[in-house]
Image (cartoon, rainbow, N blue to C red; front, side, top):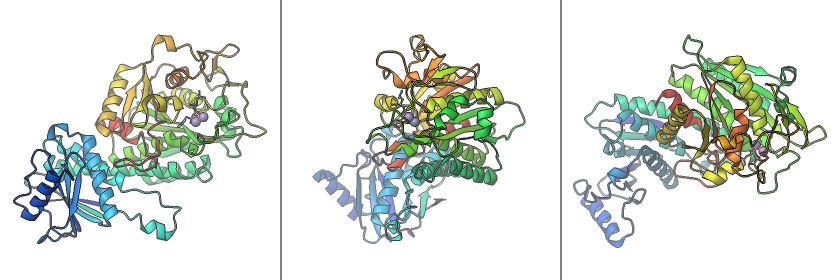
Length: 496
Ligand code: BES
Ligand code: MN
Ligand code: ZN
């Protein structure tokens, strides 16, 4: 989609979008008496009162547009960057519904001063691009045509330099397109998106963005002692892979490591998932997909920070060779783990990936991101990811990045009392809590387990199990993969 900033809107688009503050309902008197009376009529009859998101679509005589949309913006003091994205999302989705594919609007200009121009441009572009997405690959042409995308949007921006706004728009486009790329990877069926497929996609990213990619294959993983990860992959016909993608723009030894869970399908293993819990488990590689896309975004944005992305990839399946409950495996760092539940597999592959990353790359900071626990969905639902860390600066940095980007993370408690819940009896650790029924504080205990594979480095864990994959569309996202994690990590790496 093309996004333009123009001094004056031209009348060449099919849809004009006008913003209306709830407490300034007479704003369009001068623009068109006809439109003004329609607005007043709506308000009087309470058909639409122009609260945030209330909209009116009409035709205005004497104006060159096929349709004019008046979009309620609510109250100025309630406006947030997330509302910028939501508003753009609503507009783009309604335009697509109306089959109008070229838009002009003055809304961005009306929001001037509420945020920096750069933040405003970034959020606006993100809202537009994220809403202008559908996974149509497997639809017939006829059905595909019904999902046409908006082609062009012009933002009016009168009488002030647009340099910062356009810079923000450029950033927003990069971040949203990386997010949409993640959605594509997550939406791809597990029969296609195997570990080898993700490797192929990562190779393309590496080639196009001049990143370096190294891959550890099954034999290498076995030889180097990735016992926890190899254990998970044993039931699968697809060989496991550990990808390491590096973006190194600065010449210093320091780097930030991102580690993403890449279970390309989670059947649960012998603790098989039931009907109702298994259907969307192709999404269990959302963490790895977010890491891959974040590295792509870093390269496109030219972020001046070395970042490495680590993606352990495998399937969690059943079969004659599969791991069984009660098995004991030895992780990369030498600790032994009793498999109490084969469905707690994400922590196993991350355990090896985390200790390997710290030992091999000595990062300054390490953040892992994973669809780790159903418990996190129960705790926080779909509007925030869980955050676990012992480092107060990391918690606050990531929380603020989440707040600004709308890809929110919320810190869970990580008290001393939780820390022995994953200790084993006949092994160093167990992969399911020994406290109570084993399910209480599941998201936190997942974090406790991972923390045993982090030695000295500053570390945070983000559980995206809720926000990564949606059953219902939202203002600017769709059903299915959402690309959760890409925005919060990219904003955080950018320093916002
Ligand atoms: N991939 C799942 C977590 C998940 C559940 C993500 C629902 C998205 C939606 C993970 O591997 C898992 O199965 N976790 C178990 C852990 C338990 C056995 C300790 C869970 O949450 O039930
Ligand atoms: Mn599982
Ligand atoms: Zn899983």
